[in-house]
Image (cartoon, rainbow, N blue to C red; front, side, top):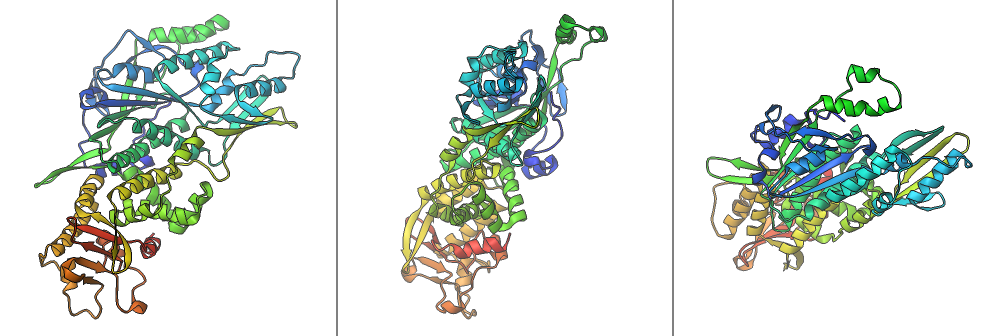
Length: 589
């Protein structure tokens, strides 16, 4: 078992910063104690070497909060994995269990038995029987579980692994993910590696599978139970980082589809370690005594406690003197994207993503720009740019996630077998690829749903109803992005309705400011609205807006090509020529 109680928040950031951003009470009831608050519970668990699991009794705390457990619910029933104990505990609500197993479990099922063959040769032959192989190139896909369940174990550990897989299959959805292993099989050293990209591919694969699981749910009040008790340390860490990312992507997806989630909580659980044998048991030697050590230790401990380690609210409530509203926690994805942007800048990110997943730099530029602008609170321009780039990669990403190439190499100079993942040369799964693809897909759908094309003074624009934009701003953003956007929309509405404000930054005041030599914005004929960014003297037109003004006004700075129309209610319109906006983004990295 792995102790994973370090106080870190999603994305590897310090939990204190996340809690400050959430502005929530950090002593709520644990998820398992508040099951009536949910209509769906998803339990996710990384699984270790299944042959080493032991059946024990578990107790789940029933009172208290993070760091303070009181009492608990005990049972005479034994479980061989914490995930099963959690799954049995959840009653009266729709539930699913997803078990993630690393491909490297295959190595534990290999055992040379033919004395007439070299050990090395027989190991390779057995590996190839378990995989879909052509010479030394093999493939792992979703059919692997069916292949393994048909086996008969060549050792007691192998048979126990197969039996555990069969038990898992009855209750859980099993997904195989990349892994790393080093193991001696008799005198042969077997290594399985994935190169420098391995961890990113593993986490990206987990994000994809968890996001896909959530998408199958149409529930509005969701809890994700994360079992961190089993599995090697990097595997548990990858899952803990993947869950909040997947949850945020799912919340964005649901808002874009017009069905926002009311509640989504993440609770991480970790059990006490298996008990160690008594001194009397440890002093015994020999076959039967060795075999009985674990059973003796289990009898000495009545139950193992499952601890609530962390609880995060992904949809949280803001209260002020005048209103109460909710917003989603964008921190996990914003942290990932902004870290990339700070390190690489726009051009660097585009090149980096295109090397991992070849779409062409122009397409990745549009995708990256729409995602970064969205996370920085520039919803209008983000939808406009996403609308123009109809790239939905998620289906293709899914096919790549479910099928991995493997190379088996016998090293003639050493008694060693090297197994290596073959990542696609231009189709490499990674956390960033899945994140950008998912957000862009949501923005593209939302933009196309809301868009109304218009020609304004001979130029093409894409327009969105201001009331709809306001609704989505309130669902996506927390302060200060929420207030900035709503204030700018109010300014636009005041002008269209003919209301003059004293605020010098309002659109109407800017239009009426006669002291300026050239006006960035001008009214349209018949009082139909206004348009910005169109000077008569094109040679002296600004190349782009000041980044500070751009962000301070939610992208509605007067130097840019946008406008508003008083028709079909009110429409906020954005030019299809977005290069100047992208240039601002590039200069403000």
